[in-house]
Length: 381
Image (cartoon, rainbow, N blue to C red; front, side, top):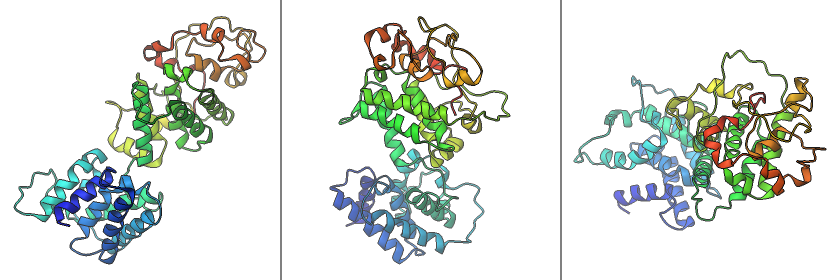
């Protein structure tokens, strides 16, 4: 295999289009084993960059592939421990989308001086020991989270696939083979079990789905999973202590909110959000998004025919009685903010009945009132 063919194999394996799974796994293993045999050699940078290109495949690969790759990356880090440089920036500081587009050409240019150099970073910065170490740390942290805390932040590729799938669903063009009901249900299940700093992102992702008309039309399992997820979050809240004067509302569009939510659902994603601010032109500070008192704001128009509904937990904490009239919001939000026990209009066993839907505003108008997904008085995390 020529060097050009090797670079193409690395790139196409990362895109999961080089060949059968066994063939791609072998390409990864050969690269990792060659690197482990000579982690400090002159060609180590090529194999490290190759492993970076193949990370989307390696993260989900079975068998020994992730372990062998992680061991090779760890060996590279040991070889370069303590080495420093005078560079203020390194190529690994760039966003993943830019890196994956650039790396194949960089590999070709570094190996052939006859090719005119056009990349923003000069050759010596690409070959810098800190650059190679940083990319090795990126590989190691992706495969063994927590093992390289100094690694450049990277959104897990499983999360990126989830983001791509949910975005396609919300835009009305699900990816081939997508079961929409299961996709929505998975968001609710993840919210139900979310903990710590990850929880804010899961709340935002699930809240965005309440703005989408398809959620109300999805399966009972999906609908109930979202309800149970929000109930679990509310049940686990205590009176939060907060020093912030203001808290951000979510983006106007559900797709942007899902993007923010998925980034905030993992340590790597939060690092990417803080460093690069994806999804939004003017992203709010990470700290305020993670605040337990952050909430979505909603207009104060009343709900019709719901004066007899039992108040939500948040209303009970504030001492308000059953006559509270919450905001007029989406059909799913009615379920999330009220326990419809004893209500002749919305009995719990009949919450999906036609009469229950008729009292709701059209869900298709949600993009214009996105901040009404959850009432102003309901703490989200």
